[in-house]
Length: 266
Length: 362
Image 1 (cartoon, each protein chain N blue to C red):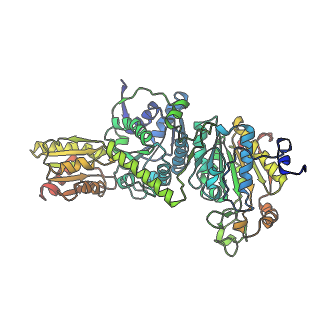
Image 2: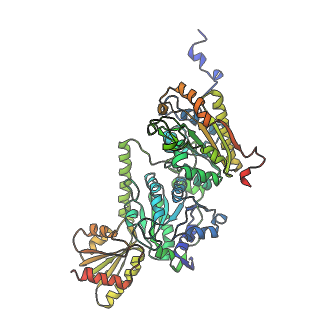
Image 3: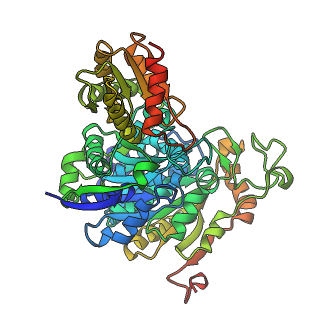
């Protein structure tokens, strides 16, 4: 009998990877090459590894990830467009020992929900924000987002985003880093195994910060949207590195724990 | 037995929130109801009952905080006045769709637009016909005294949790600002985590434990067939509320030949107008809807067999009068009298309108 027979391969000793139980068995509706699936998975792994499934409340946005509750087996609140930080504020203040996170896209967080995210950050709510920035409205079919790059073509900037007509792309993460209530502000991506590991570490740190009660943890994930960008998944990763990273460079922007003193708290 | 106090209507709401075991208040300042948030900030209930109080950055944020808190099975409330309530309506529609219990207070002022800070009843349509998008209703309680401002906080929460529906207290600048004696309730403890599990464990987002499926607070149902079923379920609930929880009060209706219909502060004024009529030997009565939704349709239809005409008195251009007319269905004449834009009619003025519109027109 050959050692390569499948029943000999699939056994506990050979197991190097398994799907976390926090991810459900539902088939995801996300397009091939979209970052949402990977980000969902690493959030689920963090929840599993921290053993906080029974204490975690997710707040899903309006956008492609509106159905996030179908994929992560935790309790969820589905928010009105842009308002997830308001829901999270109340949930966390009313259940301070729970872990509360929002999961929001760029249209949700940086356009319609600008007021709610700014004020939740400024109040220093002890929550974690996962901000998916793919510079486009995916769910409604590829319209211009607040983070759309100059020159980038979308269905509502068909000749490319221009300053005269549309204004500048909004670097909301840098704005948020100015606020004293924001404890940890970082920008990550999930387009290579190495960046996935780094992003997961950042998310874990964001969740652990909730125990320390030091303020909001804000994790931007620069993401791909091959369907919205109308290029292949492989090209999307390349395009993101070449263009998105120029305006949205990955790395920590602020870590209150490391800084000797937060200049904005003076 | 509770203590006897002298309180403004708005203060009575704040005090009642603490005493009825409210878990969280989220609000934004707007005249004529800012005393509610101010009173709570002075009382600091987070040091006594553990109640959370937060000044939100906007009414939009406040109502969404209500959504977040209500989703956790907590007893949460917000208060505002007309323009602020308009801003909240998207969130109210979501709350209704997701079947989340909560308490909202509208201390109505004159509109439209920024309008005036003076009292009005021009938000009746908004309150009783849903207000936001989609087919939905709120339970709408209309207090006519500072005592009722206090009592309806407890009643509003009870009904909200009985039916998993937002309750709305529809009041106005008169009752919000006036001072009256009020018997305040004894302090009720806030619900424990165990009680929340018992009352709302089936749906509240309190953290998914191994022994149950995940709980999701959502109003999103993409398949039209399923969304229709959800709508039918909501409508069945509304019919149930119409059957069980219509509340109203009657004055001098036993022998009445004519009837005034008025709620809230207008009902207080009409009570006086009825006295004026009775002094003149005119058999006038008053029906005061306490719930303006569900509306006392059946009782009004009964009274249409007894009286010769009805006058709907509102501080609006005529909104509730449509519900009165629907109840009466053309059987007897129904007229409207109201002052608008923040003006409050006097009892004499209302009586004169009654003489002209009902007696003169018979």
